Length: 267
Image (tube, rainbow, N blue to C red):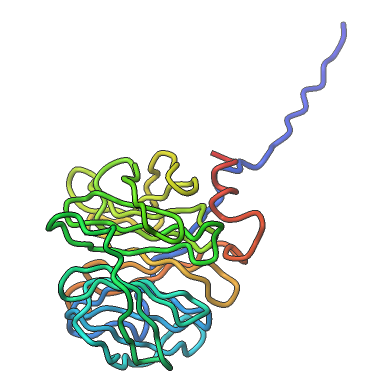
C-alpha cells in the first residue's frame, strides 16, 4: 500500500496587511475649540482651521507639534489646501469663492485669482484637496450638498466626480492615486478609501483602523519622516472635535509602488 505524505504549506495572507496604524490623539494640535486639519507641509508642519481662521503648528518631531500660531489672512477661511513643498495654496474665502493664494513665511497669506468655474449657484465648498505632485495636478472640491467636482490643471473645466456617494470632506495623496473621503455609514460619519486617478475611482472601502461609532471627518494626508500620515477630526477629550493621526506605510509619498496601488493589488 502506498503511503502519501501530506505537506501543508502555510502562505501568509496578504489581505491581513495593515495599511494604517493605531488611532492616536495628535499632541499639540488641539485646544478647547473644535480643531480641523487642513494641510501637512513637507517639513511636518500642520495647518489647521479653527473658527474659520488658519493656525500654523511647527513640527517638533516624534509626531508631536508646537502650539498653534494664528495666520494673517485677508478674510476668514472656509477651507484650504497648501502645496507641501512650495508656497502655493487654494482657499475658500468668506464669500465662499474658491481662489488661489500665496504664503509668505509661515503665517502670512495673500489672496489671488478667483476660480470662477467652480461656483455652483449658491452651493459652497466644504473641503479642497489637490494632488500637487501628481501628473496633471488634479484638484478636488467637495460641496455642502455632498457633490464632488474635479479637474486637472489649469482647473478651468470641473466635472462631477463619482466617489460612491455624498462626500463633504475629501483628501487625495500627492501622487494622486489614493483618495480618502468622509461618508455616511447609515448611523454616523466614517472615513473611506478609494484608488484610481483623475475622474475614475473604484468603490469605497471603510478605513477600519480609524473608524469608530463617533463621527470621523475632515481627512488630510501628507508625509512625515518617510511615512504616510492621515490626520482627521473626531469628538475628543480636549474640546469639541479633536485631531487624531494614524501612521501608514513607509515612503508612500514618493515610492513608485504607492500605498494605494499595493492595497488594490491584494484585495
